Length: 311
Image (cartoon, rainbow, N blue to C red; front, side):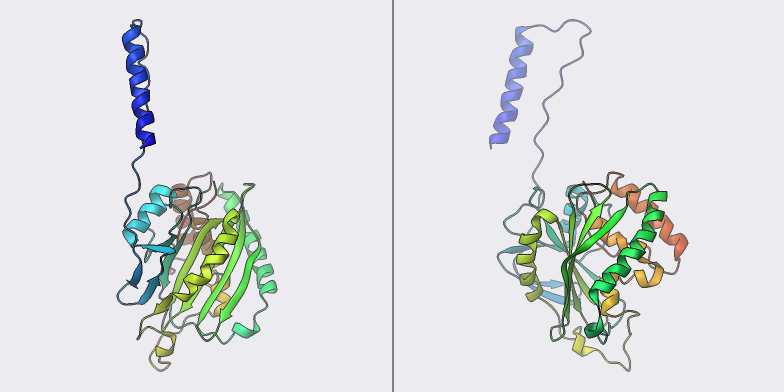
């Protein structure tokens, strides 16, 4: 209401000035007051939500709201500046923060249909060593990024060290990322739920300023997402089912890293930075897609993930 009043006051002031003093011939017309931006038209849901074709189920509490894929694309593209066409199963947003506000953050939901992920390697992973390997790979790939004209992306460290809950078949971890010399770092918080022949991905998109809030709420998210009967981890039949080409370590490092190097795995990371690289998300997306097609034509070319990078 106040915003509309301010706009009306600006119009009234301009009208009075124009009536009081006739503009000289040849003067440029005065600029019109900027119209108030229309509020986001979203349709948040609570309670039970079924994802995909009876793939998985959420029981969304009042502290969160679920946005369907259409509303999710609105937030990702119109609010956070991502390129269009990123496939999702929707997203979760905190009920007490508007998606288009500075405090806004969300959890983007996607699904990787790559086969059954074995968790036999889970207990033997040294995550500090894995972090070092990821940094080394990233440093090499940054050379290619900079040749393409984009800032380096640096893996600062674990914001939350990876943890695998074997009984629930759920994995979570968080990375702190730095984009170029931008002073504000990005939080990339990940949850993976292992299913019969695929993995449900829940990636939180926020800045490091929100790390305490995100870490406080993500265990709640971890608890209210489950695969439906028939798609659960225990429903896998080793005689007839498909096996994924990676295990738990591959999920953390970026499963695409095993196919074409960590650079392509960074698509999700770049999109997950929310407020985008200075170069522009659309140009970045196009350039990366061209590069990946040259590197690995047999691998899917569309990004397996969410939001956008830098500020």
